[in-house]
Image (cartoon, rainbow, N blue to C red; front, side, top):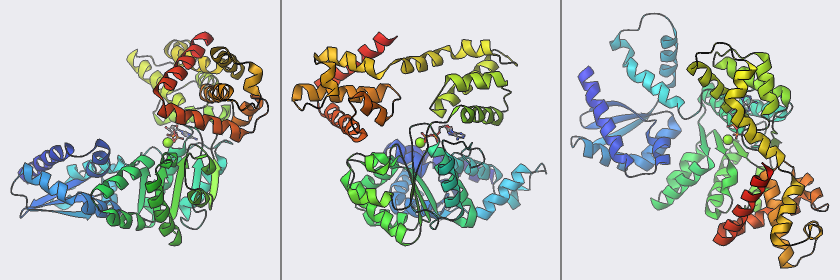
Length: 466
Ligand code: ADP
Ligand code: MG
């Protein structure tokens, strides 16, 4: 038995090695890594996929590729078969592994080692730490959390689609994955969570392989589709069109669609109007950076999750000094935990925290030091245009570019909101500021020397401010 298992493992590892050379890492990690070899009998290698959706997908897209790779590893392979994981069996195994009772005999349990491995791999797609339980609710995310919870309890009926937007590191991915995890557990719903990039990749591959109808069918069989960071669909008209049809098909069948984005639907760059209007059909909720109290609660809960004793004064200190992005906060905590282990410190106090995280605080400080007027001044000197002209509405070319560059840099280097920026630029509307940023981003993409010019300016601003 164990020899058979070894043989199976070796075959699968070799096959994966072969296939890895032929496809992108994203595709490999997303679709092939989670597969599990179950048996190799009568020339057929049997693989197990996390769920039906996954199973259908790999069968339609990677069957030939996998067969070739397995055959290269062992010429005795004549075919590949796929099945979806039996959920109940997996749940039973989870209970058994959790219980302190002695391990069941090998014959009854199948292959315990394999099952543990399978669970570990399945978990790799959704982060198991991202649950509703571990999500801290504050004023910044209350509505988004409530909407997410109600969607997870009655998908396809409450709010469809659910569109969550907000800046980076405020918990959008966390909330989406919490919905995904809850949806997959109850009623055996078919759930797919993909980043926008993965959706794009899959679509491109299906175009290359002329398998767009298989692509369509797979998505349209879902109960819940979650796409993270949908802003990247901008400027990709074909993918937009495809997504539009997928969206309609799911929506008409009362299947739930959940999207996250770094901005509201209307502000996504170069996107079809009909998609924007679909995105706004259900509910659009935003998450803003957490306030002080929520930051403290998040740090405490993260520390607790890692069984790390964090004195209140340190939690307060971190929350006071690291604003905005929760990921930065979490990174600081992780560093603190790692260093405390390294130096074998049981007690973490303020001095130790300052010593370890000094750099992180300085970085944040630098960002908050840069002000909009300072950026405007530097830009006006650099291009030799008057400040009044930057604030004015003159449309001559020598003024327009510097004004747009100043708006772009102010947006990039400060935390000022769009309306605040508008007021610095002579009371302009926030859409004017957004338009300016967009124009500059376009020009940066197309024009190398302009890119250098703006990079130089940015470096100058940062340097002068520190
Ligand atoms: P986003 O997708 O908005 O960029 P993430 O969901 O990746 O942000 O969140 C970044 C990190 O911050 C994650 O580790 C997440 O668990 C944590 N986080 C953000 N908001 C919260 C919250 N309200 N409660 C608990 N953890 C949070
Ligand atoms: Mg995210």
